[in-house]
Image (cartoon, rainbow, N blue to C red; front, side):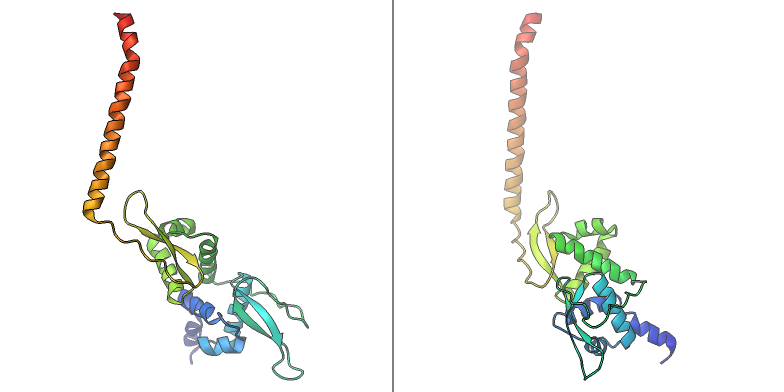
Amino acid sequence: MKPIDKARKCRIGIDGYCRMLAYLSRERTADEVTAHMGLNEQTAKFLLRWMLRLKLIHRTSWYRPTEHSRMVAKWIIGADGDVPCPDREDAGSPRKVPSGLILLATTIEILKAEPVTLTDLADELAMHQETASRLVQHLRKYRLSHIKSWIKPGFGVTVAQHVYGPGNDAMRPPRVPLKQQRAKHRATHLAKKQHLMMLRAMTGAANQPQVEQAA
């Protein structure tokens, strides 16, 4: 394999990062991740250390594959409960974290905080809504996020609110029939009209003594 082909193979992108996180829903070793993702060993270990640094995954335990061998970590998705190596200090994390992985970690942090719409997510990430939508699609593809609820903005159609983590999507509310929408709009319009008429009548009654005094 040519060096350029080898380098391209190790650039797994946002979709690859999501697939790797989904694979780590159960305890895995670095060798298992390497085999599953089709990466070389060094790249897989770098990715694990980067994800640990970004608090996307943690180490649950350590074991020796053979007697007198170095201890090997077991990795799983989630930030809490990291277990350092018991017999040596942790190696420093690689300095240059891939920008795509940083973007994914930032997106996950936003989705962890509270349910957000694609519009709100795009605003938080300072990007176009279509780009934010593709990010969420990658997460949903591997069941790393789901729709928590639906909201109706002041105008427009009902939109979904997304959260991080596996789960079943909330059902979309049934669409209100057009006849019912028109009736509601008419009732609101009449209520506003009556309110304005009442305000004008009150204003006129308040100004009446001043007009009589001026006369």
